[in-house]
Image (cartoon, rainbow, N blue to C red):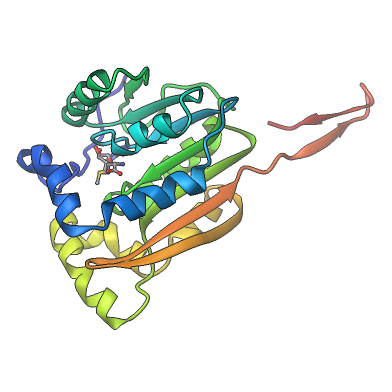
Length: 233
Ligand SMILES: C[S@@+](CC[C@H](N)C(=O)[O-])C[C@H]1O[C@@H](n2cnc3c(N)ncnc32)[C@H](O)[C@@H]1O
C-alpha cells in the first residue's frame, strides 16, 4: 500500500474526532437524514453493499439492522474512526467488516458491489479527489450497480447558503464550495455514471443536504466472433 493521502478527519481536526457523534446530534436532524439514506439505499438480502467513508459506523449499523442478511462492509481512510466504528460494531454484535485504504486505490477488485453509498464524505474532498474517488467507486460497482451519495448540496435559499458557512469554516472552503454551488451531479457524471438524480433534499440548520443517486450503466457490445452479447466491463 502506498503512503496514505492527506485527508480531513470526520470533524475537521483529529482531536475532535471523539466528539463527532455528539456534534452531528447537536447540529443535524440525525434520525431524519440517516433514515432517508437507508430508505434510498433499500438494502436487500441478496446484495453486496459498501459504505465509502464509514466514519463512526452510524450508517453501517442502521443499514445492517434494516436488513441483517445484507452483505455489508465499509472502507475509510482514517484509522482513528475505524477504532471507534469497530468498537460500536462489536458492541452491537453485528458482522460488518471494515477496511482502511490509502486514499488512492480501494482494496477491492472491479465489479464487486451492487450498491455503494457514502454520507458526508464528498464535501471533505477537493475537486481532484472527488473525481478520483468517484472513479474508484465506479470501478468497484457491478454493471448496473447503484451509487448513493448523501452530502451537502446546492443551497435551497439564502438562509441555507449563509448557515452553510459554519460547515465551511470547519471543513474548509476549498472542498465545500463545489457542493454548495450544486456541482455534485456534474462530478458524478464526469466519473462515468449515468442516470444522475437528486433523489431528495432537506434543509437543516447548517445547510441543504441532498441525496444523489446514479447508475454504472452496463455497456453492451456484440461479440460477432462468438456471436453473443456480453458486458464490456
Ligand atoms: C464527516 S465524516 C462522515 C462519516 C459517516 N459517513 C457519517 O455519515 O457520519 C467523513 C468521513 O470521510 C472519511 N474520509 C475523508 N477523506 C476520505 C477519503 N479520501 N476516502 C475515504 N474516506 C475519507 C473520514 O475519515 C470520515 O470518516
